[in-house]
Image 1 (cartoon, rainbow, N blue to C red):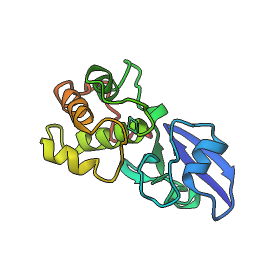
Image 2: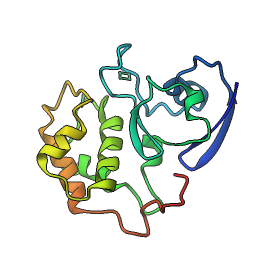
Image 3: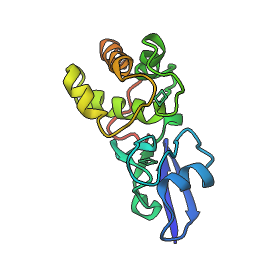
Image 4: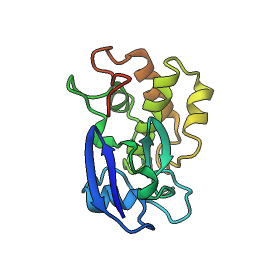
Length: 165
Ligand code: FES
Ligand code: FES
């Protein structure tokens, strides 16, 4: 089947089998290996990407289900003005160790801050509750998101409502 998926602002068209997973489309077909694959049980959440702005586990989504939709991966987080505040927050607050969970964590954080610019500690923990981190104990991840909340995206850097990224 032919699919056209807008990935990080660019339409990408490919022939895929109906069973082809979105995580495989991103990693194997497009070479966007920032989206990680950590389990076969829909459990770890390291594969999270944004589908029309909402976090989804891309190992649970078929590429054909994303046909005609917008996908944002970690490669699309950085804007023209530099790192997304979420990325900077993970640097500032040492929100990662091995980094395996980090792309998905950052995308979930971006989606959270887009709908709730000033989340509580509990709201941050709930947002990332579907994603596992085996290294950090989560405290510095929460601090990284809090740092990003204190350093919001400039209006000029934020994707507009009509943006495809
Ligand atoms: S790879 Fe583990 S939930 Fe998707
Ligand atoms: S930093 Fe290693 S799994 Fe989260």
